[in-house]
Image 1 (tube, each protein chain N blue to C red):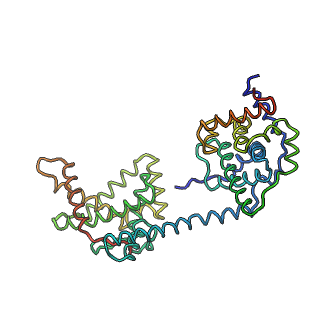
Image 2 (image 1 turned 90 degrees about the vertical axis):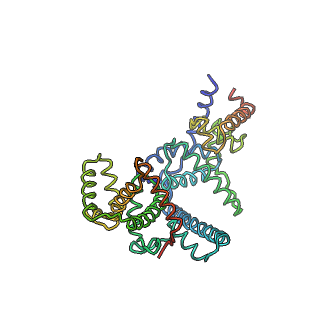
Image 3 (image 1 turned 180 degrees about the vertical axis):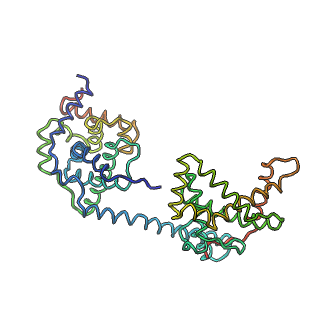
Amino acid sequence: MPTESRLVALFADLDRLPLPAEGSWLPSPAREAAAQRRWSLVPRLYVALAAVLLVLLAITSSAVAGGGILDRIRDFAHAIGIVRAGPEGTALVVDGVSISERTIAVYQASIEQNGIPAARARQQALDKAITEVLTDREATRRGVLVSDDEVAAFIAQQRELNASAPPENQAMFKATLDGLGMTEEQYWADPATRSAVRAILVHGKLVELLTPAGGTRVDGEKQLALLVADLKAQAVIRYGP
Amino acid sequence: MAQTVDRSAWEGLYRQEFPTLYRALAAALLDADSARDALQDAFLEGLRRPPRDENVRGWLYRVALRKAHRGRRREKSLGEIAEVRDELDAALDRIEVGSLLRYLTERQRAVVIARFYLGLRHEEIAAALGVRTGTVSATLSQALAKMRLEGGHAD
């Protein structure tokens, strides 16, 4: 008999070891409750650790760049989402323009729809909101306007496209709405949605304006990206109320 | 997004694997109580963080071994070193492999039991014990050599 088979046969004798009563196979409710209590400590430990790191980071950056430690801690905590205002509270202020947590939540939900993890989606949502404020102001300065009719037409077109989208995309959209606690009607009528649509249209018009003669849309996009980067570098951004 | 687990499905899998895993752990740890407690902790761990695309038996074995070691460290720190239960002792004495296992270290027992009783592959044992595949092969060779020496088996 080959060694492996002999060993398997030898070890099969372990089947003769007695088992405990079947009623004791599963953990008792008390044991399960104790485990639950231990697990509930884990997130608190992470939060405590994050807080320590936050303070260290704030002290370090403050030492390097100057400025109030508390301001830096608050800004950083808001930016990474540890601290958030209520839904109607202010998520950030860009050159004096306030953006609500609700707007950020709608943007974030829309970004998460593409499978982006929540933390990164929040970062992108904040960045999107900053870009929108700066782009909108620049568009106004250059005389680029988007009317309410254009916004309404874009939304109507988008809704038609959604209605004929593959079922999995529709299911994803429905899940996003559920996450936001909104119906489809509420979503499209929401100021945050309309603001995002307006931003898309402003973006398109600015790209057209910045596209050099004989250039392509890609050239226009590059010009706008450079312009936005420049505006961001000059903007005063504060997280939280 | 956190992965969720269907409790009844997980409980079904656990119950199905319990007899084999309990015996494997009891023989590896030479401690019936630790084996049962560790398995229960592994079950609870599975409720919180269900195994992903893994051999459930291998996963439960790995987690239970880890829990058992942690539990023993706690007990030792409290000066309560667990004693091998008489019933398990007697049962192991009645079977040939039981007496051979006593010549091995706990690590060697865990490896040979995983291989020849649980039927895990070298890679699965390596993952279960957090060691390299080469270490599993070496441990198996040493364990078999010792068993051959003591009992005239594994030749």
